[in-house]
Image 1 (cartoon, rainbow, N blue to C red):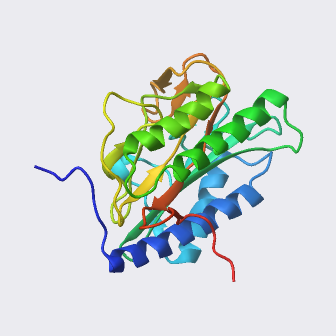
Image 2: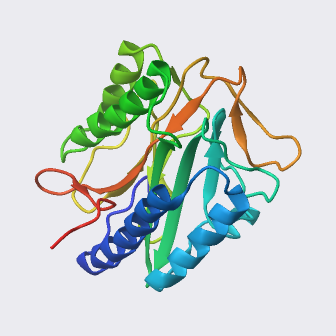
Length: 257
């Protein structure tokens, strides 16, 4: 029977840290460089070049048959969007960039949603602000001795306080030496409190919130892209986080000297 969680060794954690830093670099460079007029395929190609710069490889390309180097999801697309030559970004779009880098035995996973113009409608600003706030609330609850449900509850509280739909069909997950490891990390409270958090666990915490319903559908043509059923806008933020004896360590924040 498979273990319900993974405790990583100090040697593995050092490799995961390096991969997470590479992930953060690629994510932040994409957020800085992506602009209106680019196709989402060009964004994917840029991501491939940036990942190559780190010495790593895409953790997504070929995973379960996924055809992209990263996930690029626009507007009502929640996750798993694939770069396309015919999908040209507009200044009115919001874009979710989900990046995974595998490097020397470690893996990092992180996502960020942003608008392509400086001034966004208030509802969109709030969607981005509070989805990111829900992520940080979830991370703050990811302390040794707490349970998975404490993370879920923190995320759910922020989302519900601001009347956003919480995507329930997709969840966060363990991440470290494999892209997806146990346990699952839901963005809402299920029936049980889940696994007790222990030092050495690495979690990808990733709220996905919608302006409308929580319901989603999968594109019937590409079989990957997940969209909101009511076509409302969606935001996705994600960090890879290490559980420690003290406060959680956000591995996908770029470290500076």
